[in-house]
Length: 346
Image 1 (cartoon, rainbow, N blue to C red):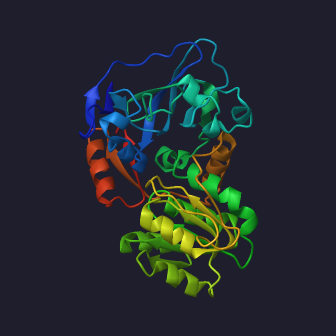
Image 2: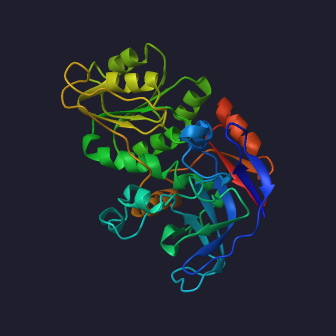
């Protein structure tokens, strides 16, 4: 089968031919209908050799949907031909966090060498994908694969972050979304669907700010040196009760801290590598900051239900598997509007 692999440190990914996978006991083989392209992959491919944590070659793609092609021995709960989404952050299934459905926070994943597809084990940018357990599959129930696949990360990750802040986002409150690309434009829709908060979007790109307005942002502000002051003015000097930074770079993290209100909350979702100093003299009183990771299986079900109800949708551009390297080039250049989706079977 064809697959998109990262094969050499520092080189672009390549479309190659690899052996067809076969499901072992407990495993499920999917015929991949769509796979999402994510900035996380670019981050992985930018790591130097001495810091690279995975074995190469690595088939990319941690967002995947497909149809069940074959079942390994002992598999129950899914049937051949069923359309499903893949829950990506796999865990051990038995620790306290996994028992809560929070495999994204599995306490034993590192110890046991458990990796998500596309982030340590073969991913979804291939004609077929092996899934380790049927519990990591969620029925699509009629959702379009192209529309659904980004929701497995670009929908689930902001949903998980926003759920934590719901008690703060009461009538009269403000939420700030920094970075309105793949995850950010979904976050805006989720905030509008789930809260009465005023949503202020920040981005360095006028195209992304237009997208932010299209999907429901009340205000769209250029993310430059004057952004924090602009947000303070829009909020009457109070700042935002919840700030979601989908970039995580030094300038955006500084802005996030500068626009947070007293007792506000800052979620650093982006993996730009910056940190926010929290404490007296650094942030307003009782501001908390956290770095969420993906979301729970139950939350993925909830995100798909929101999509089914028409409350959230992802702007997508589609590419064939042969054109997947081009999709990454365009994502790196910032010219993808919304989310790029690979169609391994055309």
